Structure formats: C-alpha cells, structure tokens
Image (tube, rainbow, N blue to C red; front, side, top):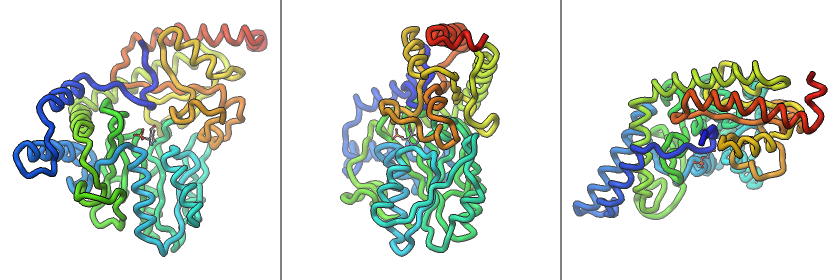
Length: 385
Ligand code: PLP
C-alpha cells in the first residue's frame, strides 16, 4: 500500500502502539483516585501533558486535553466568546476547517457578527481586510496555521500583531502544522492553539488546546475537576498516553522526517509537473507545509483518478476527509478562485513519515498513465496533442 493521505490521518507509529498496549495491560486506575494505581495514571497523564507543552514551548498548566482537534477549535472559540458576552464580533477566514467554520456559523445564529476574511489564489489571507475587520467589539480572531487541503501557511505572527494592537485574542488551528514545522507559542504570540494526535502518528479521538495563562475563557465541559476545571470528565487515558508518545517521537526524529518528507515531496512535484500535461499546482510554492501537494488535472474528475489509483493500492484524497462524501466543491478551492470544474479535478497528495522514495517512483509511473488513459477515454488526449 502507498498511503499518501497523511493530512486526513496518519497510521499509528509502531512505538506508539507498543506504549499504548503496555499501558492498557498495566493501568486501569482512575487518575482522580488518591491511592497508588490512580496516582500512577495521573503521573503518566502529566508526562504526556509535559511532552505536548514542551513541544509547543508552553507550560504544563496551559495544555488542556480535548476529545479531538475539532473539540479544541470549538472550545477555543465558544469558550472565549462566552467569556466576553459584551463583545459581539468574531473574525475567521473563508478556508478554515469545518471545525472552525461551522462553529462560526453557530455563533452567527446566536447573534455574533462574524467576518470571514478572504484569501488570494495561493490561499494566503487578505491582511488589509483583516486590519479593517478588527474593531473594539472584536473578541477573537481565529486563523488556521496551515490549510489542510493546500498546505498554505498563514502569517500568524502578523495576525497576532494586528490583533494585539486592538487588544483582541488570537486562536490558531495548528492541527496541520504540529509535528510538521517547529511551533512555539511565544514566537507565534497566539493566545490559543489547537492540536490533534492522529495527524502525528498518534491515536484518533484525542486533541489538546493550548490556552495562554490568564486568557479569558469559559470551561467547555462542566462536571468534575479534571483538566483544571475547564474540561470535565474522566480522562481518555489511553489516548493521552498515545498522544504523549507520538509527540516524544516527533521531538526525537522530527527534524530528519521533515527533511526527508520535503525531499520526497519535491521529487513528486517535479515529476508530476514534468510528466503530466495540463496540471495546475494549487497553493503557495514556498509558504507551505512541504509534504502537501494539491493539483488540478484539467479536464478530469479527480474522483476518477482517485479510484484508479486506489485499484493500484495508492491512496490520495480529493479534498478534506470531512467533505469527501459531499457533492459540493471544496470551499477551500472555491475560495482560491478555482472554477467548480477545476476544483472537481483536484487531488491532494499528502506525504508522511512512512513514505519511501520507492513510493514516489511508483506514483510517478502509475499516475501519468492513469491521467493519460482517462483523458483518452474522454477525448481530451487528442486536444492535448
Ligand atoms: N483542523 C484541521 C486543519 C484539520 O485538518 C483537522 C482534521 O482534518 C481538524 C481541525 C480536526 O481534527 P480532528 O480530526 O482531531 O477532529
């Protein structure tokens, strides 16, 4: 199998699997219990929290475990808006993940004025529009760090600078950058930042929200005293253990992975552009998470290419996993100005830790042939010639 959909999810790292299995066998205590089997689990949770805090340059107490990256985004946005009911404005972008977009729509229904900042044809947000949108009534700006479909990385430090000038809090959804590029909450300057374990070879169903000390935010789940009273409920201990281990591995071998993935993606990019006529690269050439490649194969339905690749055991995506089963065109590709038929011809290839050079060679052998045949069937090959 050649798995090239690492932005949708990543396979569990074997070391994470071992750690989780060992934990499951040995530990069942409730971390809130005061006797040793409870305390032991509490300590392990603290280790994981420290690993995540360390990777982000944050403090232990600033990390809150959540049930997913989606929950972290919901928590950040709703928690801040709830804490400042007198401020009735929220700013985000048109290319956010549904975890943020749908939360924004929910806020609109509750009477909040939401401004969706547009992006240019590479996926970068319009900073002038952002500047104009910020008012004394704005409580929060939420701009994703990198986009899941294009990989385009936003200038978050500049967003923070603009926000700070008006005393506005800034959240970033860093689900796609955590583990892929170096992140430091102080360098970025953000007040809140979301991450998720299953994008970094950890388990699904566990995420975390970084909340800068002193940030005005309401608890998200009410109940017991877990997670500093911010997110009640007995902890997803197995998920937290896996998340912590996944982060430790990123810290140990992340640099090597990053260089290798960038090199492989570059090979893939050059190969696609050389071997396949009438392709259009979508995204930013340089301000991008390097392992993410998005191409339109003009004249074709991307789904046909995806299915043909799947018969060869090669897995890519036509957009975000969440919008895959919907008829609609990707909101991200629409936002960068692609016409619906071009958006529908677009594939995302996202590389990861377990891809090998041989995978790239296989794709560069199979994909041009698939595209050629599909164009031949639809009569497009003749026009290309
Ligand atoms: N934000 C971004 C940018 C994502 O890519 C994803 C996952 O696809 C999420 C949020 C949601 O994370 P989770 O799957 O952990 O809910």
